[in-house]
Image (cartoon, rainbow, N blue to C red; front, side):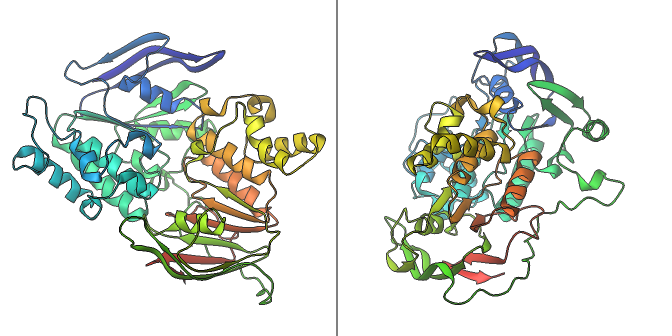
Length: 467
């Protein structure tokens, strides 16, 4: 159904795809694994028809529409309508059907209502999709693709920003979609379990497909060759290494004195613009120096809104937020590509410390150390354009830029999203050595972080509760 032969893609003096060949037949589902920057997204875009290769051949079944529907990593990149219902309606009319209002009786309206119901989007149907949480936007993206009823789908890390409940529901929906007709599916995913039902697994390194074939055999070969891949517990003969995503067990520490706080929130209330619904509703929080807190919350629970308040980038509708005047705060946003602005990675990471007056000699060392902490050696990345990096690499740059500030308080919004296993390990190791305070919010429990946090809290109904 989709095939590429000896495909090459170049960006300036860099080879992004190097002689790549891959074939996905009808009724097959394939998964692609690979490190950040290995060329996975570029290959997906070429296969879908969003960009042309510099050389090589792309063959698609004549029955497929081009470009093939594809889910991008950036949720906002695929939102165009004023309401969620309108977003779904954009693709609901099948070829040959008359133009009608989406709320008129008939197959188009029925299709829209079915998709809204399947993806649990009816409560959001009249909302502006750009005002939703990252996970809610992701659900809208997926629903808008499924309403197209294409014979092929390409999904670039569909798990991003989805909480476990939403991800489980979506996985069932995409499985049902795949089984309905003669279809094919290609997923780029860091979720190990996605390969269990796949017909093929391809592993990419440095722009090449180094292994491809039946998933279990490819997995065995990768492990034997020392290639870093997600660990599939069901395929391990020995007890898996500690890599489970369970709520972290807080490490026990002495309780800090009551006066030793660096941030205190009391009865915070934040209402959503438009309908006035309280996102945060009487929230209290005490954070002490050197304390590290993990905050878990489902999609739309208010995690990002809370971080914006704590970073002093938004104002609450009620309540008070107390912090010393000298407190330096650093916030890593959920979508790192939205914080990139400089022409080079080095300039991106150096901007904040430079504004703080760090001397040039010290600044160069600080930038190099921050990049090294996240697996981005200066000799390879310092002069790269951040907008040409993969999303995972952009996230590492954004994290390095925040760490280079040496803030008293780190505020991290789903920092592990889109990171490969090496990047995730760099993040954990860097945070373990971090001497200041930390608040990490996420819709999923992080892996291997039992020894990192002092407290784990759940954000629900606008308030924080002990886990």
